[in-house]
Image (cartoon, rainbow, N blue to C red; front, side):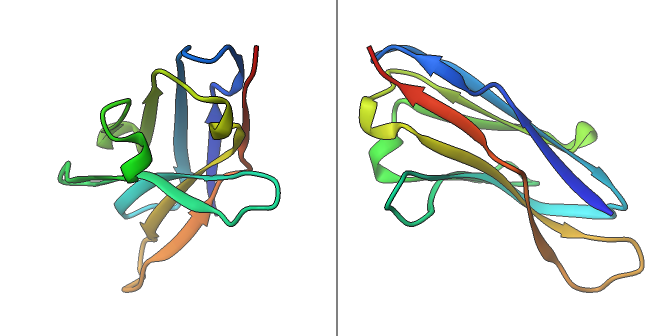
Length: 121
């Protein structure tokens, strides 16, 4: 009963920017953290950036200084501003949320369907 919907992917030229959005909905008591992962063909899924409900952030070394993650706890939403994009960052980007549902004492990871980001000239 929890759904994550991502928007904002698309085709962008090298050096360009995109802003990804993800909103969680459903039976949610709280969200401990939300983050963005990406998976390129033939590669394992990797963490791009994550943010806790308190605002602490974590970035992959490769994106530090170029990407910014932010959140709106009231909307159960997370955003990823991606600047100076590189062709090697072409991948499907997935939203993730660590969710505690109502009447539950455990957290569960939920995943969005993914949004394609293609960086090409």
